[in-house]
Amino acid sequence: MRTLPAVTGRDELAVLVVRTDYHDDQAWRVVAAALMEPWGDRPYEAHVHFIDDPAWAEATVDEALNAIRLDENLPVVFLADRTTMQAESHPLLAVTTLTREDCLDDEDYEQLTEFGREFRTTPAGVHDVHANLDIGNLGFEEYAAWAHDDPERIYRSF
Image 1 (cartoon, rainbow, N blue to C red):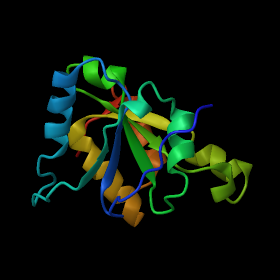
Image 2 (image 1 turned 30 degrees about the horizontal axis):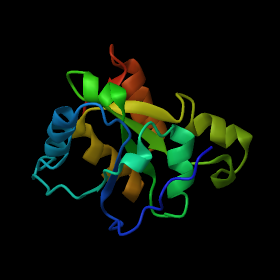
Image 3 (image 1 turned 90 degrees about the horizontal axis):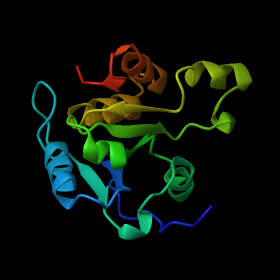
């Protein structure tokens, strides 16, 4: 497993989005613009910390998680991978930072990752997921279940 650059300077309220696909700059601009749109019913200003560094090209989920492990205030990271760039709805890969060590026991971990440790979400859903996980209003497993129930396996926001 390769070592990726450290993530620094992220405001603890900002969503972390890591670009791992560098084949289509135009698609990336569309994704980044969508992520900066105000969100929610108020609407809220988007706060996003982008990692747009070719050193992260083709990074795996495990490599990304290893690189961001030191950020203790980060419940989820979003990867803009090949699927994100190619699919019409640009669904990002949401990955929980939860580890077995964060749980009471194996049963607790299994329950919290029942639908896996990742799911896809549209750019509009990124802020819902991050905000609710950050304040503990909803759990990762709930979002993963909603994505699992979608015909395309994508969480699409409230």
